[in-house]
Length: 135
Image (tube, rainbow, N blue to C red; front, side):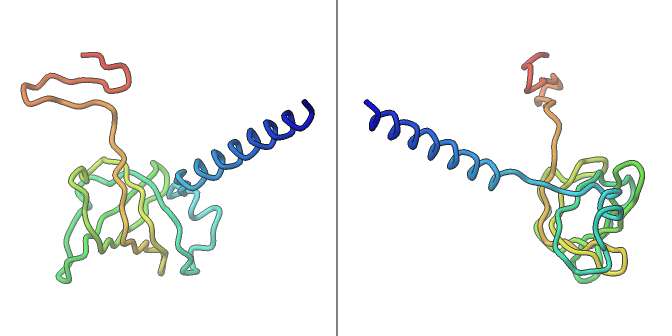
């Protein structure tokens, strides 16, 4: 009886540990634009994840096919130079998470995730809220 209890306890512990490891590997932590300047030394070229909303009228292309834009968290604006694949959902006022580094207060990135809301509009103009699936 005692041996079975120890085996069950060991199994539960192993499953719990594995679940925590998997969850921590799939979690994305990122700095907002304000947090980046408050919590890290942006003068170093350390790679971080930076999140914010794309400013209106800030998106442009450079001659060497990079995309320049500005993101903000509502307090601090950061200029972005992006050299990578632009997701289809990318647009102004959309939330983005970028992976890159700072050089002279400008954030250089080569990887982007686009955060979207939970509301979708069908071809006939009807909107649906995915969380509650309400019209």
